[in-house]
View 1 (cartoon, rainbow, N blue to C red):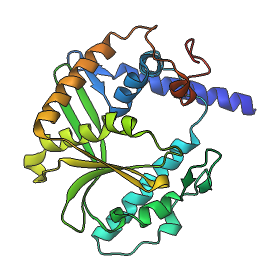
View 2 (cartoon, rainbow, N blue to C red):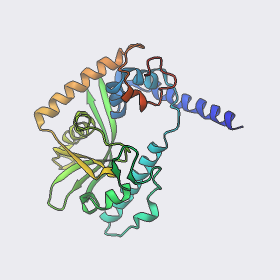
View 3 (cartoon, helix red, strand yellow):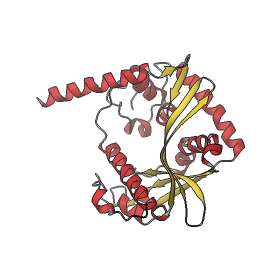
Amino acid sequence: IGMLERDLAGIAQTEAALAEVSDAVEDGGRLRLSFSSLDAFQTCPHRYYLDKVVGLPRYPVNSAGDYGTAVHAAIQKHGEAASRGEGLDLDAIWPVAPQASGAGSDGVHRIDPKDGFEQSVDASARVLLSEEPFALRMHGCEVVGFIDRVQELPDGTVEVVDFKTHRDLPSEEIRNASLQIPIYLLALRDREAATGLRVRRGVLHYLRHAVRHEITRNDAQLDALRGQIESLAEEMRTVSPTDHRASPEHCGRCAFREVCAFAV
């Protein structure tokens, strides 16, 4: 029975993935993208190919991803309560972490993500936007998604922040290369007239490590980002089944490593 239920769940995931793929190209061939699809393609084109072109279901189920979603929901509720001037017991709504805090086998000390949030400046920031949807239209593509939070710090600084619950802290090089915060800043700049918010600074907050990694972009850099995304979209449109960047680091974290012909 367990095997049957697993197979039925796999069929359902495949159907959902194929439905998503069928909607990926619209408006006369405009490619619809998200940060996650751009990130997957940059990490390894074959990961993007298996996920978005073939539509394979992801195994195993990522419990860490489910936990991250639950943490985002708890932080959002905290921000909404604070904006109403209400208190909120985080202990009552915060999910149980799948991994314990403390020093791991790699020797790196980690804290409970809830403590990481409560001890940070984010807990006392004024929330201006939360889970804000956006759609960036560009030549030949559209990037859609949700911005975790735009907030005003006690010192008056306005920034966009994305909360991370990763067990491992990515290297500074990887953090700086991520397109997530720059995409959010570009989306906020496009809506500047509507929101009245000028935001040129973003933060990737790794809650388990108490690390707030700041990223800033000026207007010239955001203009260049638009061109970079359009170039990536063209490469994604013509991705080959054999294009890949297989490596121990990339493959070890890939949901398709068990079925990928290039996995190492």
